Length: 461
Image 1 (spheres, rainbow, N blue to C red):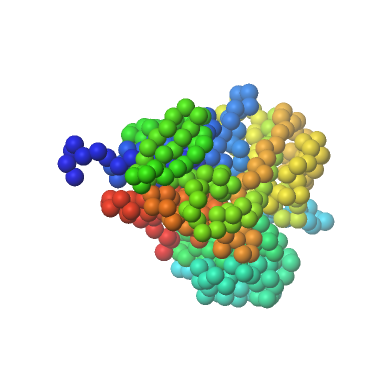
Image 2: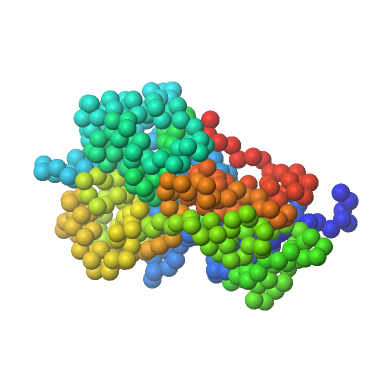
């Protein structure tokens, strides 16, 4: 292509992780890209805001070593050093459902081949009996034989599968749901077996280090807004904030017109990287065979409880809990910029349908005593601040049957692609799924245009 040949024009609608990924990959392939975001910031549902001097993440987000898509994203925005991974999986688990008081256990891995890498940690895990540990081993071997892409698995719920494979209610609480609720945003009976199999076979049974945990040492806004915007600018992407797309229409010459309140852009290719309901409203007729199926993809909420104490009460960076309403607790003191001698803890509560609309006073009365049960140092500490963040549409609900509702990146309209963690990535609604969807949409667009595609995002081995 000669230097004076006009570059293909792309418009990406939506500035979450899916949209930013699509925009970067399209720009890297030489397209003239405009990214439209209706909010005053990038980052989608993984963002930060200010509360006085405190920089608050709307929710606690983590990723795993097997999340090769999100790791590509971090590398691409020059931020991998700001969201480091554990050297080796180590999850402290406190059980407070005991009369003798809290008991600490750990989910750990060793530097051994799969599945032996987890055998020692399971053997030493104090929250399960010997018989329950043996049943977990048998279930894990059965999981390893499954193909998460098998559509039959999407018709079964994870809870039923676990019961059929001898898992007791205690085993589900102390192990399977401990991991599954945080990654799927659903308890086992409400989760598609296909998505559960994806989580466990990829995260725990693909390679020894696959489940090592990483999280941001800075605010999410620093990663997904500030550094993402810098990467977009460097790549030549024109980013327009507070620019909500009102319509997407096909022109007579086969191109596309995207209209906002203040601009009309003509493009060769368009990526819709917005939630499923907004995508439904923007889709032109005939783009999907059954567009109303998008409206049947349900949402699931996540609640985050934020507590600022007047002194340190937690010595480790995070822990999980069983026998308690508390699920996962993270120390966000450093990343928030908290000043003074106190400590800021974020309590992440997935599958929070029963709590998402509770008043703050009721949540305070529920969670402060629980934190005191879990953390003896909190019993004499003063509470400098207590607040909650609520994401009622945090993820799509991974219910059995949801797989048939999730479209892939391509539509029936040439030049129009779909992205978002809710699309058919094979993953649940995670940062990994969002990045993979954006990459798939960009690669589909480039293939239609006959342009070289980016480096593929590899699955964990």
